[in-house]
Amino acid sequence: MNTDVIIAGAGPVGLVAAAELARYGIKVRIVEKTTHGADEPKALFLWSRTLELLDRSGCGATLAATGHKVTAGSIIAGNKPLGRVDFSQVNSPHPYALAQPQAETERLLEAHLASFGVKVERGTELLSFTETATNVSSLLRHTGGAEEVVTSQWLIGCDGGNSKVREALGVPFTGHEQKSGWLLADVRLSGLNFPSTELISFWHEDGYLGFFPRADGLYRIIADLPVTGSQSPASPSLEDIQRIVDQRGPGNITLSAPIALSAFHINERNVRAYRQGRIFLAGDAAHLHNPAGGQGMNMGIHDAINLAWKLALVTRGTCGPQRLLESYNAERHAATDQVFVNVSRLTAISVLKNPMAQITRNAFGSVLFGLAPARRAVADTFSEVSMGYEHSPLNGSDDRSFPSPGPGERMPPREGEAPFGAGSSPRFALCANLSVEVNELLETYPDLLEPAVRPPVSYGCIWLVRPDGYVAVVALDPDIKVIASYLNSLTQSAL
Image (cartoon, rainbow, N blue to C red; front, side):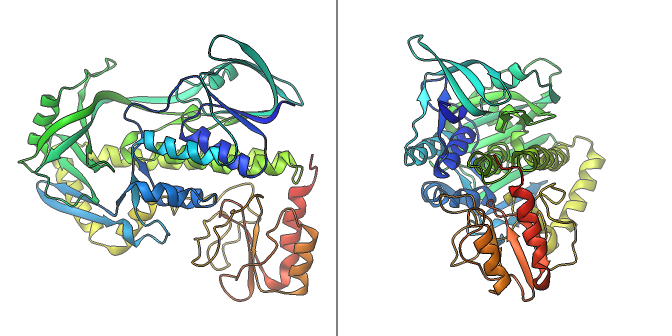
């Protein structure tokens, strides 16, 4: 083998996948056909759960130090405040949305990857690949035209919406394209009398208008356009966007100094299977999102982290491949489907054109956002801390009678403790009271468990927490054999 894993695509998803694998000691090469990083308006936000997951390798704090922290989101309808969601109340070390242009996110992630001794091979294109029962043979073409054949155990396609890996696999990219058009502008503006720490959405009778602050003092503006059918909407001018802002916004806002103006149709697409043998798809190569929810890049990073610890345990020979690797598709496909539902509903509500439907929406929204539990639920959904794997095949049981968090749910990071999954090995954590039986587990599975137990959530129960911070099993103290049986099932048929 030339390497353990080859990754096609050096956007945020590929960079995170490579860094996660490298810190686990897995040999990885990451190739990118372009010679430079992102230079056009792409993803803007990193949400709380994504930053938590990046904390595991020490990268979350680095990103947070340079980004712009957005702590709330407000909705205005008919020039009246309809609701306000406070992200600062989210139970997370990162209770905010981090606004940062994708180019800067990629720069920091590439530097993070380099700290593990891995350099992005820019100007190198994956031309083709052949899979066998034991490896993947990939044909690469480098800058200047020289070609190279690389043999690896695994191949991960992180090469975007036009993925060559997905195309070569022949996997259908199913979904739909919305008929209405949208515009996006990154501009400087004056006259917006809202804090720069808030996302502002206007639900106007003529359509949606959103103002999203960036780390560099600019704002991203997003608005829907009239239905254009299959024809791509024309790129807007600054004057076009100014007219929409004047029409739908609060008034007296002036736009200037645009660095990006674009128009697009929203695509929502998803492949049926994120894994085919030794080949995996992640990020936009597997699923395309409506950008209105700001979830697309985050979901791709979650893909990368979900896959990396599983692939590392299999590649290191600690665990058997079948159960772990099959769970990647089951977990991430379900998570993507749920995000599609949530964002599609939000988008449909925000662009209602029927006057009676708008009145009903505004009245219902005013009541809903007046309830503290509803506001918290919305904040937890957007920040992704409520996202989990309730029906995962990796869950030890579906028993919900134990204290929370249950199997498949996120174990919140705990102050004074290292993040779950930190370190150079992808280990599970035991949250339990010390006992002879617990010590025996630690001695039996030294490559799979952290060497020291963590305090339990409540007395009388044991929690087994995965390397990505989700609960695998909950059991009563006397039923510790349930934990042992689960760990044994993972190690069976190890390579």
